[in-house]
Image 1 (tube, helix red, strand yellow):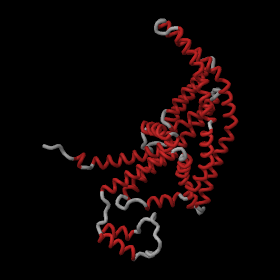
Image 2 (image 1 turned 90 degrees about the vertical axis):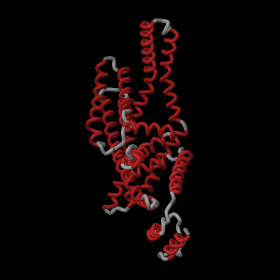
Image 3 (image 1 turned 45 degrees about the vertical axis):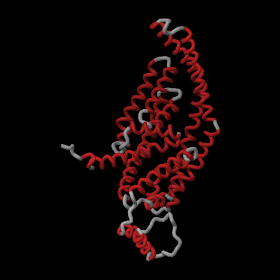
Image 4 (image 1 turned 180 degrees about the vertical axis):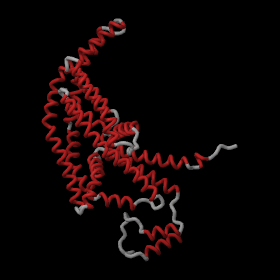
Length: 397
């Protein structure tokens, strides 16, 4: 061990600038690594396990302690990751990296503001319409619940469904919408929600600009920290994660946008009073497999039953929803996602719900990157297992 350290010191002493002050975050130069490899300077298995466990513990503690303030920073990292390819193309065309990053961030802000300004009056009108319709929907729900319980009472007798139970359920059905409305209003109007919205709106673009500007430097710095022994393996798995994740992010964003535009326009043209809100909700929630379609379909059909006095209007709304499902399954998703994304729908749903349950909104944003990373690592270790003696060892005689 002392001979190894002595050889390393000799190599370091002969390097240019060896007498200058060392920066501990800088990895050792290639000659130092070569000297360590030739003189038998190797890490033990216990040290490797300790490093992995330490990184996992530090990451878990950081998420646990700072989960409430990490949302704008994670959102900024997602934006920088998505905008890095076009910013790199602008840089190759001769534009400085800072100017390219600033241009991309301003383009995103302008797009969001334009979208908000165009839709804000329509959304406000429909929200007001929804608030005014709450008593009407409550009365309809109360009547529907009374009719269902009356039918059950006639079918199973008064011993199973009595009058008190019928009055209780119908009365509670009438107050459910009011309770839901007050809950949503309280959540939206709380100071914590307002603080989160302001932090996302103000901090995210600033942090996103700096991350996008320094993205190549950050990638090179993290790459320089990789252990020499496993550097090629880690780089290969990182490229696979990047391929899957970039395909999912860009493809899913286009799919959500197209579906939101289709459902919002289709339901509005079909005559549904709240078609714009329901359509945007169904499209934007479609990044969760099946959830956007189910929530949007049930909401649209329920509002159509309450609004239209005949079945023709409900059938038209159902036709819009069925056409959207056909476009989603046979045109939009195969065109923009296809087989490039190796993320099963069940795995994505589980990851999103698990991340939301563990860390809230922050967990939802981190769910898909973590799921993609776990999927790549699981396939890597499965391939190694299938060629290992643990799998190929024949049974004993």
